[in-house]
Structures are given as C-alpha cells and as structure tokens.
Image 1 (spheres, rainbow, N blue to C red):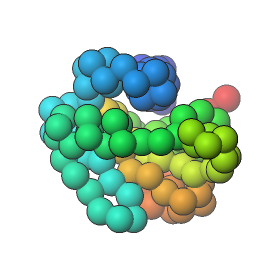
Image 2: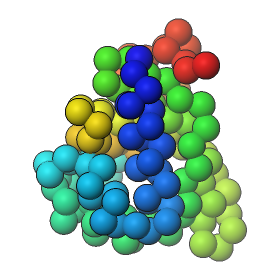
Image 3: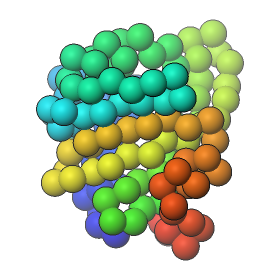
Length: 122
C-alpha cells in the first residue's frame, strides 16, 4: 500500500464534491475510464460531463487498497437531501486515477476487484 494512492483518491473525492473540475482533471489520466452498471465512457471530456451531471456529494468511508486498486465505501447525499451508500473501485497509476467504476455496494466492489477485508486500511 502506498499513501499516495489513498491521497490521490481522497483528493479526487474533494475535487468532485467541490465541483473543482480543473483539479479533478489534473488528478485523472487523459484516458480515464468512468463506468457503472449502465456503461462506461473514457477521457477527460467524459469525466467532465459525468462530474457536471452528478447530483450527489460523495463522502468516502472505509478504504481498501492493493496493488494500485483502491475500493472506497461511500455515503451519498443528493441535492434533495436523500442519503444512500455505494462503493467505487479506483485504479491509481503514478498519482493519477486511470479508472473509476461505481458499484451499488461495498460487497460488489470488493468482488469485482478481488480485494478482501485483509486489504482494509488502518
């Protein structure tokens, strides 16, 4: 585990929640892949469009990391005040997010990445 992978993912969340698109793009590779059960898109233009359309704030919770893969349990709060939970799986290479995939829950994200409770950060 490296601290930089966790720091990159936390900074990515901060930029997303602050709608700081310039910083979000700086923290992401040019060919970043963004996806969920509905499909995937690639590149900075897709990331910008996705971030601008997002209607929730995403607060990171427990984090799991192994070999550049970071899974984050997340609490969401919509613009209408509704709360929820989900998880996202990030790939971090050289302090840049190269992919992020949203999952409906932590179990699904861990299963998709093959991370386990042993990969939970302290």
